[in-house]
Image (tube, rainbow, N blue to C red; front, side, top):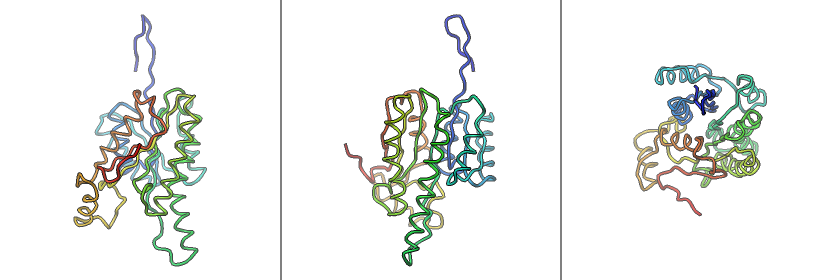
Length: 260
């Protein structure tokens, strides 16, 4: 891409985004929205075949190879480091979206060991992917202009305990990032969705009765669309959101109202 400035031609690099958990649901919608906006995207996750299929489908939709897949276990140091290493030398990362996670607790705890396993599985599955990937990519972030967006959940405000507690831990972490990185022109914000049926999150629980019950928990009486979450992330990652940092943006149809 080229832009003319006062008689000279300057090259403007296409922006680069990394989206974890980008193969399905909200992450895939975010990747697709970026690609449609002319952003190059790296989608990251553990399921290589699903990642590759999603990248191919998005590229076919936008008509150009904007999206590529990197398979990595972001719970591990080597996995997070491999994502950073996959970025071409000399290229900045403009946008990082920490979306990977889910309620991965093994179920009701039968004993004290079970309590520990429930907590550790959700910390490892929700906190570590965001924290390790961010710190791995941070040296590559554009300065100024870098954007970090972390996707949490309404559960961070009201539970369930282990999943909600893990997501809630990302809120003060993001606030700390926002303060630390503000002098370098990098923003850090949180998007906390409520009920969004178009994901894998609810698994076998999803049926018409379950959907109706969840939708009735907000005054709009519906679930959110993955594209609605993606649109907010795209705005937070855009050039007009440079003065917006350290915030938690709830998207839940009024199920839980914000407070000043």
